Amino acid sequence: MASKAALLVLLLSAFAAASAMAQLDEKFYSQSCPSLEDVVRKEMVRALSLAPSLAGPLLRMHFHDCFVRGCDGSVLLDDPTGNKTAEKDAQPNQTLRGFDFIERVKAAVEKACPDTVSCADVLALMARDAVWLSKGPFWAVPLGRRDGRVSIANETDQLPPPTANFTLLTQMFANKSLDTKDLVVLSAGHTIGTSHCFSFNDRLFNFTGMDNAHDTDPTLDPQYMAKLKIKCPNLDDNMTLVEMDPGSFKTFDLSYFTNVAKRRGLFHSDGALLTDAFTRAYVLRHATGAFKEEFFADFAASMVKMGNVDVLTGNQGEIRKKCNVVN
Image (cartoon, rainbow, N blue to C red; front, top):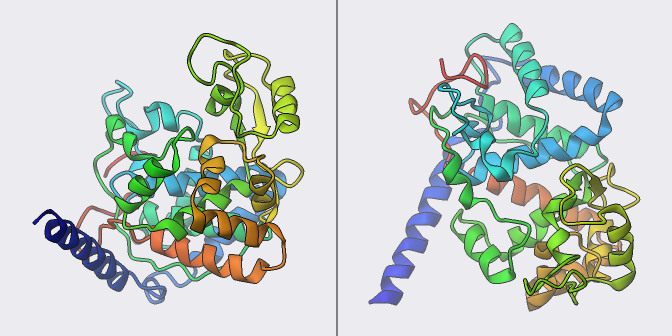
């Protein structure tokens, strides 16, 4: 009976994902806001020409939005009570940045097409352009998402933590109808952007929790670890930023896989990709750098799939005038 129940859950999840995908449409705003993508891209080109390091955070913002309540823009909402209980106030989201810029892009979209385009759709387009302007793939973004009205800090426990092992990662992705291939493909988003030391310093100090400051993660390349310890010399560092893909953190490329293959993935979750036969094979294949177009196509497909997670459509939710507050 348990196996039948599990099968039913999987079938229902697949049906829900397919239904959401069918409701979104790449041409959703072709009549109501035909200039939408041009407006967003103009703002993105201007911003990333001045601050190219913003691309990684914008991609991460879309990911964090979709994993909590689906892609509904809930990560952008402020707590109206001022008690800091919204998603953006939770520990996993306190390092997110780009909120003010998202508001600026939304304002430009509102000027062109008032009360028409959701913040969730604006964020999905910005994430795509962040990748493309970093020399990554371009893909058509299915549109028609509506904005949610609820944002709860405690629900961010659905976000895969950087300390997760492979079992936890696959479980958390499966909860969002994303499979093992999506896991390894989307993990490569770490090819752009930076991270704070506290997101990975458990690998550098007291790894087993036995109060041994010299106890380190044996799966991390020793030379890479030595470099990380110079940048992050203690467990209390909450400010220092480290490139997730050293040497090319502003360029969307295949070097992420090269680093992971050499046991130089920054997070425990990156290294975990080597513990499964399928994801290890995928990493090693793309670490050669010979299959760029294949990976780019895979990444685009997984982004579209993630962008359809638990979306609000039709009369659900609302179209926010500002992304940080409900109407």
